[in-house]
Image 1: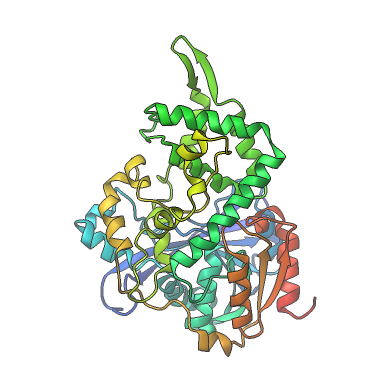
Image 2: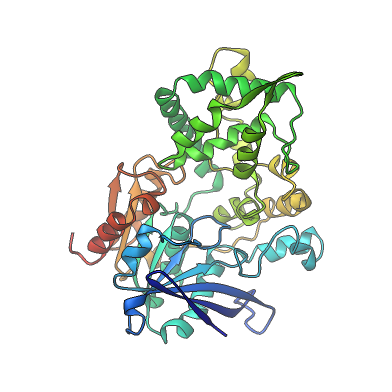
Length: 434
């Protein structure tokens, strides 16, 4: 049963669907998907084309908005009825987390279950619900970041379901192993850190002081998170967003307070940090992040952790022993996270089994992409910290008819920051009006 309600200027409808856990076994176990339909109030009775929004991640539910809606959505509602899908395992779509996964059994059963939560399964979910949503008509897909990875998988598996594809910061490498992804990522992250310190040179000493404190103290955040120096470095994930450098700076500037026992990390600092580090709200990000790069019989085998060893400049102890600035890290998942984060600790063995898995199905079909007939436009952000620009442009050339907008006006979150402009530009490219 669907339920409709109103917010200023929009009509919202909660929709739920039942789909197979494994689309290769359509009569087997099922899971539930949740999606929120959004339409402008003054167009609610019109027969509008559909736009499916695929959220970035992996592991995040679709945007929830309160009052003022995201700018890109306002632009989309000018001509579309929009479906905000919680991809399987996220949000209200049969959540997968430390509380629910034990229902599957032990770690091996949990890992087998989570192997069904990659882009190929998400695409099959979309195709399963599309007839119920559009009456069978193809729809436009807007994929942000990992949502763009899913859109390219969609073009590979079921292009007949697509009228147009719009991708923002999410063109995946078609044939790269996870190791290739991270070997390209660490130098990008280093550049972002250097740019941050150039903007805020006072943060060099602040970051070193915090790191030195963590190396010498056992710090446990209020939520039970073990705050190690590696965890502190991982706050560099902020640097991939348009406002991230400023957010990191403000976080660092008042980290310490004076106490009778000497300087300590302030309660305010720790409260902010635990909100940034905790995976309680999106555990799938940690569990399947490297699995999205799984290929054939090659295990990912904690790729980001292994490749990091090839870049010794990221070693905090070595940086502090000399006079080098502390380097933050970016979008990567490491085994120690499953020791530090109470939301992940029970899933440590499950994550290890996924990292060792050697039976990954192909996500992309190069031959089908080379023969693509669906209009596709992609925003490629110059020196994107999360998605390698060279990999993205190589993929763009491999998809027949794909048109790119390469820009340094925005960072990875460009669709959020510059929504109407980004969407207008991509729609014009896809419609051959640019």
